[in-house]
Length: 167
Image (tube, rainbow, N blue to C red; front, side, top):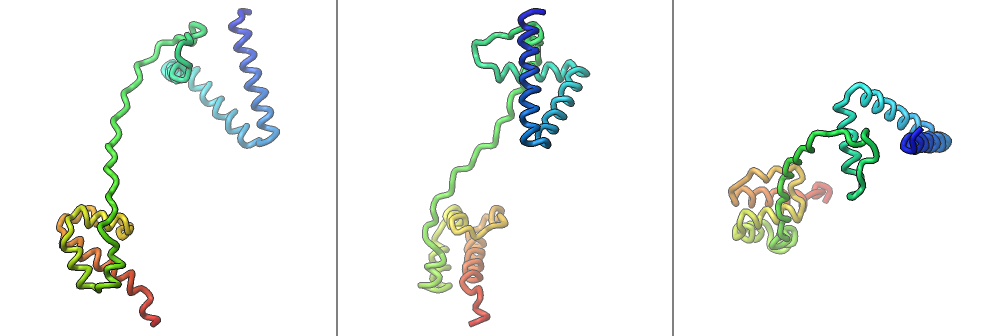
């Protein structure tokens, strides 16, 4: 028996011991891991492509500078696929120009409408995002500032008048 075979047997026995210790603490987890290991082993025996993919994973996990230990570790694998580019994150929204609830309480509906009418679409969306007025993402498709102003006014009025039926 070569030293490489002896080392592998010791590693396999260590895995079995670790599984036995886990079984004493959490039998379900031990059964799950044993079942997963059996499925992986069976599939690796059946498919050389799967076995190659496993060794490819090991190659990516192996620290740089360490070479393959044996010919079995050096199974050629397909080149890893390039990751698809992730969508670019949008820039975080700016803080709203003002708090529409405060303006509504101080100046009423007309005052709020006048202040909102002076803002751009992005500034209106900043207010919506900051005040969390659009939990259903309804305003993302709205392009006209007048529509967004009306939408904000409706939400602020509804929120401020909530419960007024009991007064």
